[in-house]
Length: 173
Ligand SMILES: [Zn+2]
Ligand SMILES: [Zn+2]
Image (tube, rainbow, N blue to C red):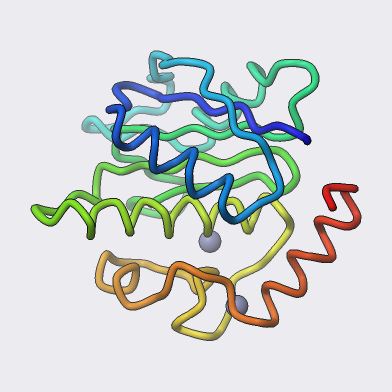
C-alpha cells in the first residue's frame, strides 16, 4: 500500500493525530505514517499567522523516499496569497496542510468532525479534485466555519467517481 507521511507543525495533540490518521485511512486507499512534529517556517509570518505555501513547500522538501504524498496538521493559523486566512492548502499530487486554529469548539465531536472534513477536502485536492457546487459535498469551498459546519464529511457521487478514477490512475486499487 502506498503511503502518506504525516507531520505536525507545532503541537499536534494525540487525539487530533488519531483523528487525522483515521480519516485518511478511512477515505483513501493509503497507509498514513506519523513522522513527528516540526517547527514552523516563519518566513512570510504576519501577526502570528503563517504563510500556508511556505509550510507546504517545507513539508514537500521533507517527504521521504517511498512516500506518495505528504501532509501537515498545524496549530498555527494560516493565510495564503490573496486570502486573509485559510483552513488548509493542497498542491495536487503532492501534499496538503490543514490548520486547526479556527476549527476548535467546546464540543469535542464537532471539533473532530471539522478536522476530518478539512483533511478530506484537502486530500481531495491532492487527488486532483476541484471545488464542488453541491453545498453538502466535502469538496464544497468553505470560507467560514459556518460553511464548514454546513457541509458533510463525504464526497458526493460525482466527486467520488472522480476520486476513484484518480485512485485507478495512481494504481492504488
Ligand atoms: Zn478547497
Ligand atoms: Zn462533490
